Amino acid sequence: MHSQIVYLDNNATTRPFPEVVAAVTRSLESDWANPSSPHGFGQAAARTVALSREQVARLLGARAEQVVFTSGATEANEAVLRYHATLGATLITSTAEHPAVAGFYFRHMPQKVRTVPLDKSGRWRLEALESVLEAVSGPKLIAFAWANGETGVLQDLTGIKLMAQKYCAVCLIDASQAVGRVVFEADSVSYLTFSGHKLHGPKGIGILIQPGTVPQVEVLIGGGQERGLRGGTLNVSGIVGLGVACELRKRNLDSAIARMGRLRDSFEKQVIAAIPGVRVNGSDTQRVPNTASLTIQGVDGMALVARLEARGIICSQVSACSSGQPEPSRTLLAMGLSRDDAYASLRIAFAVDTKEDDVDFAAQTMVEEALFLREMMGGLV
Image (cartoon, rainbow, N blue to C red; front, side, top):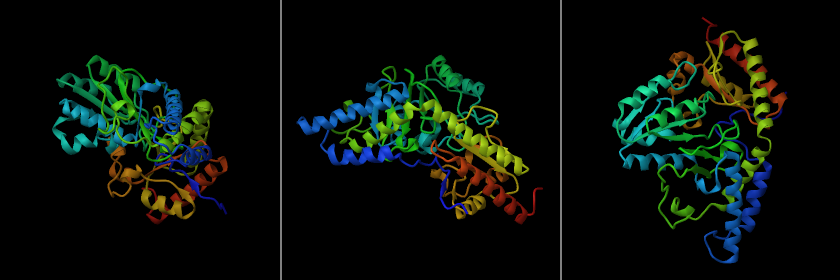
């Protein structure tokens, strides 16, 4: 009997590293002064924030002055969307994006939205993107998640950015599921956002990178913090935790990427070998190394997730922000899956500290439960 909980929902959130918890606790005890205050206590907190900003910038290949601290990617994305809406920009996105990436336009300016279809691998069709860009006049904002939170599929970042430059568009890249899972450097022509809790950092803290070549977005109007770009007293302890999480991943980025890839590949191979009719969504293109999206034909995905949880394995069907909705995954439908296959899908997301024997246990248990459910549902047709 496996006695421990096996947490495999790391695209929803990650367990904070012990070093992060310790750093946040120390900060709450010692860096509680307002970093905007001119006295010594405040300036000590300000120096702590500056160090954390450098740590974040190093992981992202950015300059420290480009990093604006926010409450998370959702706030940062919405600020960029709101600002470009005031410019009258047309939003170019896909129907498979997380609501945080394009939701503002869909809610308030649907007439200014143009969508790009996905191919069967889950990537934007670049020829369709070019057709949309050619047809749109005036300001243009291209908004997308670099790594899809359900499938792990990586968009063709280079191809999209080259297309944006060709047609004088600006990119908003949500890198929440990519940071710490791929090697990259922030560029000089795109907004970039991410949330710390996806990288074993605290919740309630994230960043917006604004290169000097793009219009500078004021995230919140307030007391002039963050160079006047995001008002409000800084969340020093959250910033410290984010900085430590970024520093830890920067030290072992290559080995972390390799380890997560080995865990995912081992899991997929075991499940595919034991269950007929399994599809790994996005397996024929580039993915982040920690994510497996499986379609197990003839199995109710929601029932399988529930049975796995009863045996101590935590995973999910879709994005945590959509998990309360009875509809199938929009991402999988956009990739061409039928509604039945989308309902028969689930997401497994590993972390760098996931144990090998937990992976084996999860694979074995999934095989047992999936075959049981398939038999109960009448077998594979």
